[in-house]
Amino acid sequence: MSSDGKKITGVKAININEESAEAIEKMVDKAIQKIRGEGLEILEIQTSSDYLIMILGKG
Image (tube, rainbow, N blue to C red):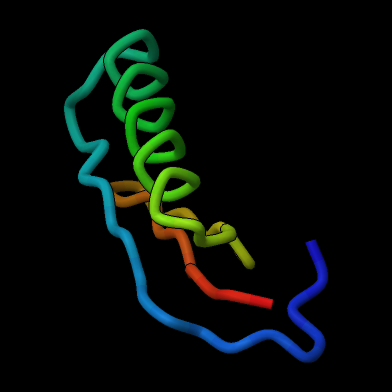
């Protein structure tokens, strides 16, 4: 996932605190489908103990 030459268009943060692995997987799958449906790409993914953060963009 190279972000060279791509424009950042948004950020998607998902609260994963106190969620099971199965619930996190479902939330992330749903978010990815929505992002792709909007014609966006995930340029980068960052995590913390409470959040999964996706940096969104277009090429």
